[in-house]
Length: 502
Image (cartoon, rainbow, N blue to C red; front, side, top):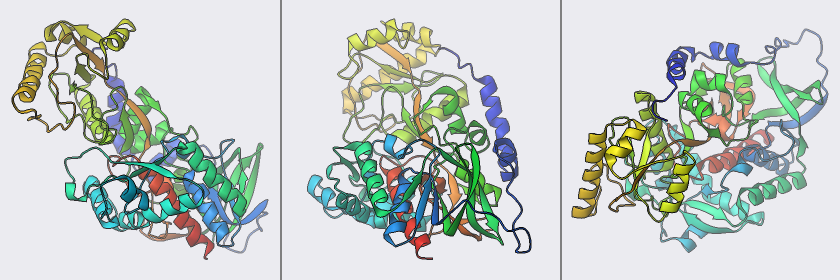
């Protein structure tokens, strides 16, 4: 592919910047009727089809954790799930969690004195000054306890790795914090589900929440579609939104997250297909404040650049339309992906990985990619450049500079690359870089107690949010593997405890 055939798409992205108002968003995205007028106490009495203490929307990681904690505190908890089974994106993930100061971290890494404070500072620096500091510090302070809780459910953490480097963070706050088990996400969230069910949580599958019910200014329940029938469910203590973000909703993505919009149009989104922004839309319809949209959880599709600090990137470099490098290729994957996306949209042209045969991409593998039309090859840079429509002289100069730096100093003097610092020799290959999208960043503004805040900055009584449906604790790019599951578990457990205590 030479010139990106995406001119109309990019024009659409630019136009969508004007649609950020919540009213415009709901007009374009709502699929249900507007919420019924509030019952001010003098009208017809509503008939409830079901009643519970804590009503949770979504049976992903955050929702199940909320339900578990609510029932452990003695409250009745009901989880509505649009899909036919539990797990959401959590059970489709890598099943890894960031945590600091744990026994597993001390046992399996050299980081013996890591703290929640350092962990929080690292996240805040990666947030580029945009995060809610209180939320981040609260989340990291609870991280070690969440590992202990999961261990109490029978899980064993057998490996701890670390995020790849980032230029904006102080290395003194870095540590290996990504905790993994041998059973992966399926084993982890099956254990959470089983614990929640044993604790008394009720699950209703194939049940889609459609709107919140408000009486006298307070959220008191929700309407849902179940078996083709609209039902009303009363929540005596509160409603927790745990429906994740806007991952598969193109209209909301167009209005709120151009990067997610691009990814949905041009790549695969691996988030649960039920993540269509339902809870965010319902909360916005009653004044819920949206925040921190724009970032995504992206992984480079072919090189898996910057997956973690323990996995070096192969000898290669990325080039833009002009045959020049533009980003350090082995920074943490979501930051690398953000730079790739920016370059692609800025130049309306694909970006390419340039390499020679190496231990990861052998000549046999690369030749297979060429034969299938997924890569290009040439004996010279000029030959290769002609096939990918980039400037041949610049491409040769980029290769010459790379090889010169590696030969003379063993360092990347241009962009401070840390791994894969080897001379690149022909035959040369190029393949288009793309993304695997793992979901969007952005959701409802919450307090430390998971209460949803309205556009005036006031708490909406009876309404709470957790996991990726909440926002403020993840910034403009995903700060490293295990962050989403930490947020799901932390805010899910906390919301369940807070609401059940009312």
